[in-house]
Image 1 (cartoon, rainbow, N blue to C red):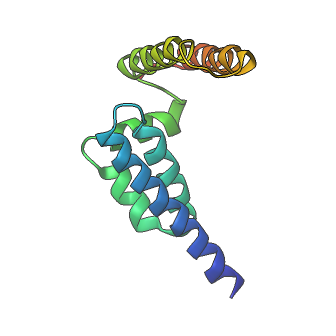
Image 2 (cartoon, helix red, strand yellow):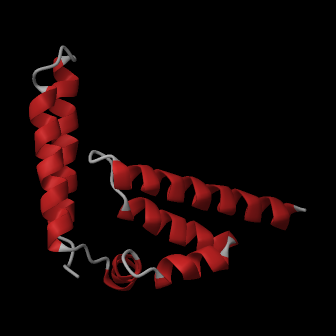
Length: 122
């Protein structure tokens, strides 16, 4: 019973991650590959067929495998993520958000960008 419930939770996380990745493929402000990496990981825990399908996918499979093997992120993805975070940080400055949010969120984005650029490239 407990094993079946755990498998159901892993599969639910995998399906939710794939759904978010599909949304990310359509919306420019939401990423795709990180959700597919999460889906492959969750699939490996409770849905090996989904994990195998994602790893063998012609477009996304290499990105997932590079991440698993070396934590690698393609240069194009780094530039795109940096551009999106910078655009978001600039637009945020023109909103009526509290000053702490307008400073704190871009600071977190800067930390993420630094971490991202320190990752090896595929």
